[in-house]
Length: 148
Ligand code: DQA
Image (cartoon, rainbow, N blue to C red):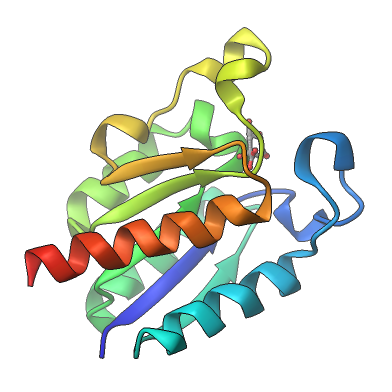
């Protein structure tokens, strides 16, 4: 059994109400429940954490290393396009992670087309709404099984 973490960046607590044309109608609670269920089905445990604060996300990544978290499903949200500090935190702990996005940032404004995470992620899933998270978790589990 592995301990896994779903990590969500700023404004994702507003899912369900926030720009549904980009992000769909699923709430973050529904997404977290789906992920926990999918992880449990595979015999693993998944915790979730959301914050708008870069430092809180960084501290949660550090804590994940202390807890022996085996993998992270991460939607950095707006920090995708700005955060060297979050990138450095993931490099520091060397926990494998999958980058997920509800929308497809490559099909949106030019500033969303740069990610500080894609080149260090196991993989990226984007554009499938809440399903991006589920597919990201399945990809992460396949990666962990291969690496075991
Ligand atoms: C997002 C895409 C980002 O560009 C945006 O800032 C978000 C959400 C997504 O899930 O589609 O907050 O990460």
